[in-house]
Structures are given as structure tokens and as C-alpha cells.
Image (cartoon, rainbow, N blue to C red; front, side):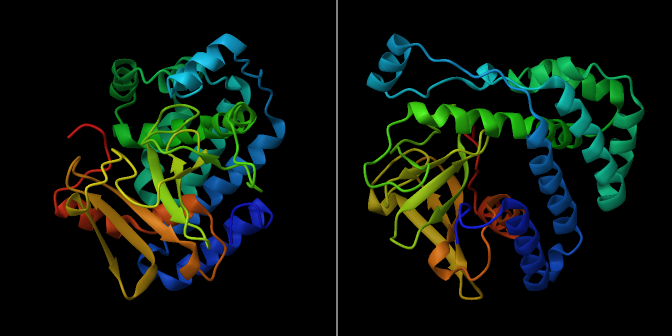
Length: 293
């Protein structure tokens, strides 16, 4: 079952319900992310975004050079509704995520320049983000999670609007792009998770804008190395819907969900959360999901 086959809210709820039953170890974390993703979906109704227009000559140049359409900092975002969502997410964290409760409360009580904060995230201004973290005296990963989640609906909506600039396969029935590169064709970011469709095609999901794109069935999805002796994977008979692709060339990994083995609604972000144990196993064996080693 793909993301287009049922209402997104229903998809999130059913996916979360099934995952909690199947993975008791995640029974505390999944409800938090369920509410976070529901809040993000709800916020999309009120977004006021300026469309990103790409000039014909720029579009032609980018396609000829196999470059992404835009860079992450070019995404527009709705500061007003991102700020509202940030407060909502902090409130959810206070109720649902004990580890985040103190940080969420600090953010709610602080007089933050949220427009600057969101600009820092869009532009990946690490130095400024860390200065904010220092002032708030909270863990960096907590601020990154909550602030990035607040701008995510705008970024995803922007990517959906930009997708019409990409060439689709003539037989395609969805909004998936064929792109045999190790980065997103819209924003150039790395994929965060992949999946295999019923026909055996392998698809990736961008870690920043959440655009879905088809990549080659074989080889590393990240560095595109196709040497068979450099490619490995691991899986468990107890979790046949998951596998982890490993590349000994770039020493990176990516988690893959095999939809042919899935008998529940597929909501990729929840599958990402419910497979942290696979990340730990890959990292223990010396692999990373980051570009830098």
C-alpha cells in the first residue's frame, strides 16, 4: 500500500497502531511521532506559500547537467504558520515525549526569533543554530528535531509544487521521478529511506523535502557504485519487510522497506522511526547514513 492509496491521516493512524502492536519496544516513541505527523498534515491546510518559479534557461541548464532543480535554501516557508506549528509540536512533546519535555518547555517560554531560527535551518547555518542552542541550554538534537519538523510541511508542499518541472516516465501513474542519482532531483539532499514496489522497482525518499524518486534496482543508492563485491545487505526473518543496504565503497547504508512483504498501511516516516534498531546495527558495523565519514 503506497502513500497515494488512502487518506494520509488514516494512513498515519493505522500505521502507528500496527507498529505499536508489532514493536512493543517502540510503544512510547511511536505515539509521539504519530501526533507530530498528524499536526504537520493539519498545518498544511493553512500554508501561504509563494511558488518557486524556475526560468526556462535555468531549468534547461540544470537538466543538461543533471543538477537538482533548486537548493534547500530556496524553499519558501510560511513563518507565521511554522511558528504556530513549532508551539504545537512543543506542547505535544511535553505530553508525549519525556526526554523532550524540558527542552520543549524551554522553547515555549523563550523569546525566540523564530523567523531567524527557521532561516538558519533552511540555509543550514550551523553556527547560528548552535548559538541558539547555547542560549537555550538544551541539546542540539532537540532543537533540530522540533524546528525542522515545524518547517517540514512547507518544504514538502514546495517540493510537490516543483515536481511538475521534472520529467515523468510516460507510463507513470504517480508523482514519482526516475532519477538514478544518489541525491534528490528537486533539492539535492540525501535520501533518508527507500522502498521496493510490487514490480520490484526501488525508490528513494528525500530526507529534506520528502520527494519520492526511482533509482536503479541494483548498486548503492547513495554513491551509485555498482560493483557487486562492494554491495551487501542484511535482514531478519522476523522482519521480512525490512532490509538494510550497505556499501563498502562509500561505507554508508540506507534502510529499505519491501512493500511486497508489507501488510499494513505504509507511512515512510513512521517506518523510519520504528527501525532505529537497524540503524544501530549498521552503525555498529562501521557504516553511516551521512555523507561525511
